[in-house]
Image: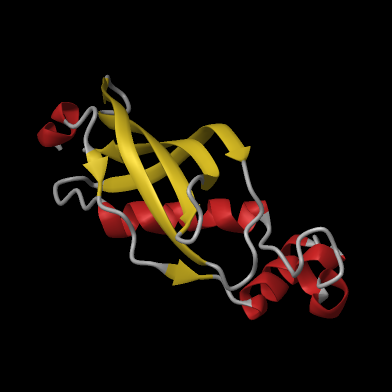
Length: 147
């Protein structure tokens, strides 16, 4: 955990490229209650503003937690917890099936005093469509590692 304090400015490894399938979007719509046709009706969405169905913004945000788990392993932490998000923006729609990747940079590491002993990391993460030249989603994510 001590090394985390020296990681400000460090780029995180990009994720493996991945795609969100229509079935994933449909299941998220059922769970979240957000079943707008732009997400769940491929036939109608073809004639809509995006030329097909798009992935929910909150579904995309939910992928950031798994990115942390796969990207930064802190062996001597008792636990790692999502602490929150700041500065979230949905910059461009993500078509279902687009090939995406997540990238990040650690922007701050802070030692936590008792009773919460540990380290809090702030990182700027972005989800990018591999076929586009700008991010689709950007967010400052905050993760807390406890001793």
